[in-house]
Image (cartoon, rainbow, N blue to C red; front, side):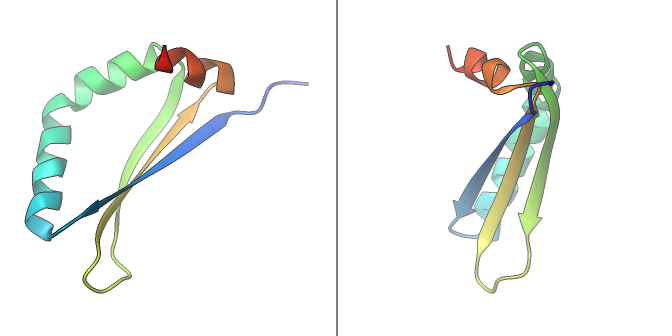
Length: 77
């Protein structure tokens, strides 16, 4: 039996849209380096989503899908 993929979700809350947009701009600047580094450690898929369905909430959700839990834990060392 193959090992199941390992998924991590990270939620980021911001005080306002300006702070949220600054964070997105920062991610855009380091995206290619970040993804290259994380793929070398088993990352299969990464996504960044904005939560729109709640009033006065400025939130992003990032998901990271790794080959395995072992690959995910390797990145933490």
